[in-house]
Length: 237
Image 1 (cartoon, one colour):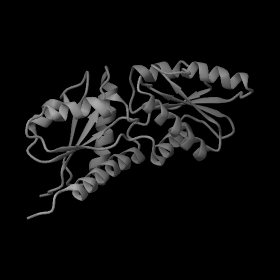
Image 2 (spheres, helix red, strand yellow):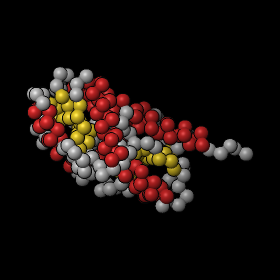
Image 3 (cartoon, one colour):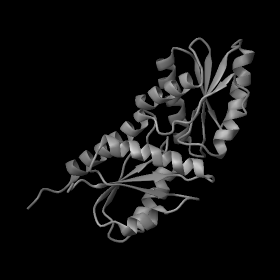
Image 4 (cartoon, rainbow, N blue to C red):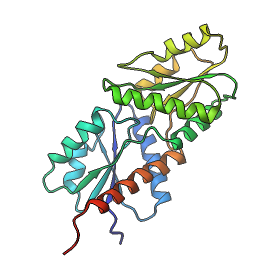
């Protein structure tokens, strides 16, 4: 039996079954990559089980991996607050998934799946946040994707930030870019995904979803947190 901490994937949650099913497929990929590792899912909103309930049922140490693409309010405040309110829970919160080169690989592949070829411009459509740090993470992700593609990539925000994807597409066209794609910088289908598709681009790529690079990144964040916990643990005896 494995003595590794439980990996608790923390999803944001969204209305509609496609979001939950997509996250389920992603975590199936995590399990395939790491057989024997116990993987649970807790949600912050709209989907059951809530994170607090998952933590209450744990009988082992855990690492919480936020399935979130930037270090915004949920990562800095909401998730630690749930952990602090769970008596007896032995849990460490890993970093948010983004930005990271593995996500650039996944975004590039999703664009190719949608029929995109290099030589145009791309709008990276993120959910957006009232936290400036989370939006700055999106801008860093846009730079990573631009290096992967060799094309200009403009960050945009579907909520609580500017420009919106539609504004970014329109501005790129004003600058002379006839071919513009939208890369959905989202974990799974949901409300924001539909808004990104209405931005007026030539091509709109699917969300990150159950891409193997995303599953590998979930495990990398988990492993980093396990190492950090071991490095800061008091010496035995």
